Length: 417
Image 1 (cartoon, rainbow, N blue to C red):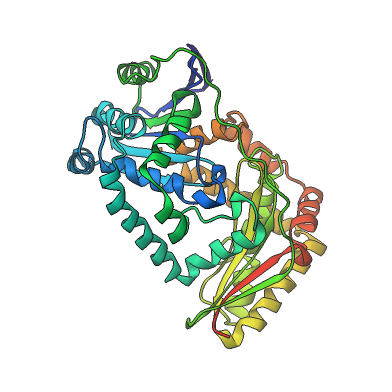
Image 2: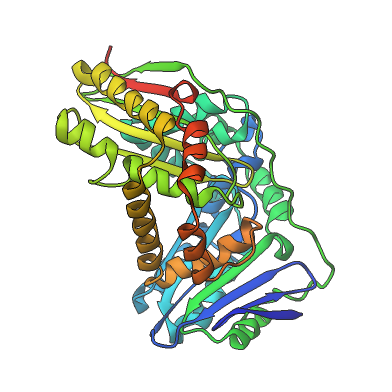
């Protein structure tokens, strides 16, 4: 195995079977965060099996070769630790945050979940009901549902537009054999990235993983290929009628993947546009016009594309006025870019957000894994801060003109007529 030093206290090991292990030692802590990322998630699913990755993520917690569902829930929790998992668009992640002394147990449990789940048909019947309830919960929560509707409107015929949870029909049709097939095809070492941060010794972490059999299969097996994004549907408006008290609107468009160097420019623009109380949208729509309590801009980066958007919740009678005010702010930013003061403030805000996030070992662990998963390589903090400082008004103006143009925005409104 080849181990490289990426930064002070930060090591990366590439195993012959394709597994990549990263760790960052933070000796001042008494805790450790560790996680396993599987390069398989909702973007890899056909429409008829929508929600399969998420259902598999649920099912591994129903029991493994070594542990019952109750033991999985109990072992770290009684030690004050936490165990969690999520399914995204491009990866599925299993994570634990524990006292440093409990790291071997966390590695054991995470390996059990990822490599040794039972996936029994009798467990599927009960867990399927849980997922259907989760789907129902989103449908009853309009400020969640509107984001799913917007993704579907942007990519109607691509998995990036499918629901991560799936639909009642697709989840009901899935069998235990489907989950076992997906597990065999995707949950192998070469398709995984393991990261840890905190009071972690890299050599000891490799020993733990070796004990759990992560390096037994020495034959290299390449990661699953990423999913190419299809062109997004830009512009247009979709109205979904629901008997809700508020009207919920999402504006947005596709952008670019995480490895695109313009991501820092887009992050600055997103913050200035709608990233907090000082942002243009908050000041205009909430403070000046009093049209909303919640309004914000957001961005997501995927393996082969990205997403930029704005959410607002407002009274149905105010929806048209809020829509017009937001689109006017889009026009102003696309036409004029940022002032020198806004750019300077936006840089300070983004740098502060990044540095404050690194106070948390879970964030540091996620940053390590992301550098590998997004195929962008590891960048030191000084490098990242330097790239942010290097953004010019001209670069910001070019990104604003391309991605904040109002005619590019797809708008979804959910609420009463």
